[in-house]
Length: 97
Image (spheres, rainbow, N blue to C red):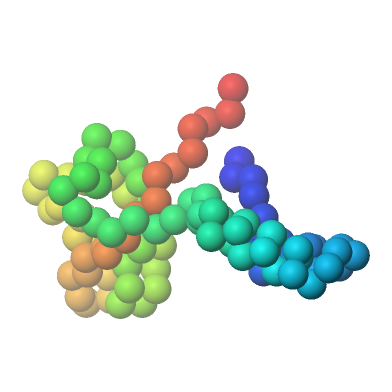
């Protein structure tokens, strides 16, 4: 499970605190600089795992699928009379214990 808070939610929550404007602005700026997306889409490249299923994004029709690399076909997928290639992926989370 991914946990976290978006930059927008953090900014909204902090803006309701009763601090001086300068203190609040400095804190918001510092925290927003440190915020990172917890589950980012990564570009398909030589580091993309080929030994397990991953979550793939196909931009042509904005389709997302779970797929594992195959030597014969690579990452490609035949969809709607067109052979498509994904541009980004996410790792799947581990099964719960």
